[in-house]
Length: 99
Image 1 (cartoon, rainbow, N blue to C red):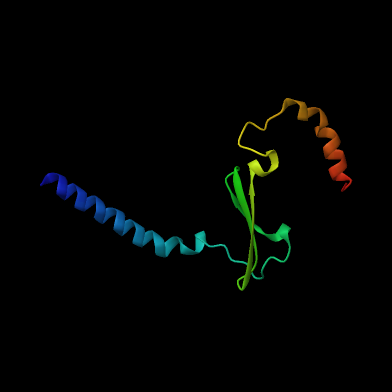
Image 2 (image 1 turned 60 degrees about the vertical axis):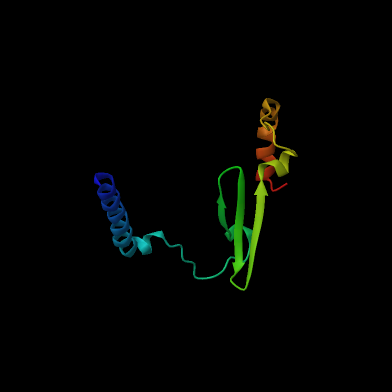
């Protein structure tokens, strides 16, 4: 009987906390934009470092561009290559020159 009472009390606390916080913090958790993204650079990025998406467009014609780290490497394996470091400064230079 004691376990049931503790369970009911815990469920009551969780439920009451979620209702009181929902009204107070609703506006703090919303993202609101005045116009839809028209180019990829204005898109909303979503992801976790392994898989990602850029969400953009307007509500009637939404676009979601997906990406996965295996797209770039061709398979699920370790993509870190210490040889890449010697090309990094050249890549930075060319990127700065928009090449």
